Length: 108
Length: 120
Image 1 (cartoon, rainbow over the protein chains, first blue to last red):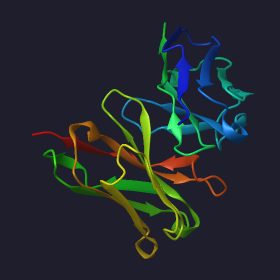
Image 2: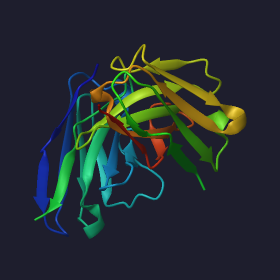
Image 3: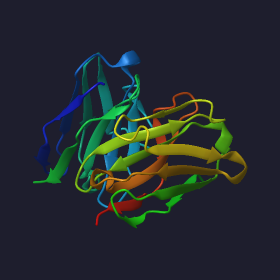
C-alpha cells in the first residue's frame, strides 16, 4: 500500500498569507494520480485538486497543485477566511486508494 | 443537483451488524463507480470499499475484508454497505462518495455521512 505523509501537521497563518502543504508518498504515485481535499468541521471532504494540478469545478484559482512521482504540493496563494480547514492528499493510482493524515491550516 | 444521502448508522454492540444505505439523485447512478469511505473520530480518511457500475468489480480494504459487503441497486439509485462482525475500531462516520466518470478512485461528490458507533 502507498503511505502518504503530509507535512506540516499544522500550519498557523494569517489571512492573505501563502500556504504551502506537502504530501510525500512511500512509493511513486501511478500516473501522478494525486488529489487534494478540503474538510471543514462537521462537513464532508470537498475535492479541490486532482491529477495533480487540475482544479475541480468551482475551485478558485488561488488553489494550485504541483508535483510528480513521490512529492506533491498544494499551494493556497492568498488565504481567505474560508480556507482555514483540514487538507488531505489522496492517491488514486493504485489500489488500495489511500489518504494522507491531513494538514490543519489554522488562523494565527 | 447531485445529492448523496446516507442513512442507517447508529449504536451497535461489538459483533453486531448494521446496514448502511446511500440514496443518490441528480445524476445517472449506473454510469458511476461508487465507494464507501470512513473517518474515525478525530482521525483521517480511510477508503473502505468500491463497486463498479453493474457490480462486476468490487474491492475492500483489508481492514474490512470478509466482514463488510458492498452492493447497489441501480433501479433504486441506491448504494449499500452491510457491516457484520463489527468491532470498536469500525467506529466512524461513513461517507458514500462518487467516483468520477474517468477515474473510479477520484471522489467528486460526497454525502454528509452517517455515524456508526460500536460499543458495549
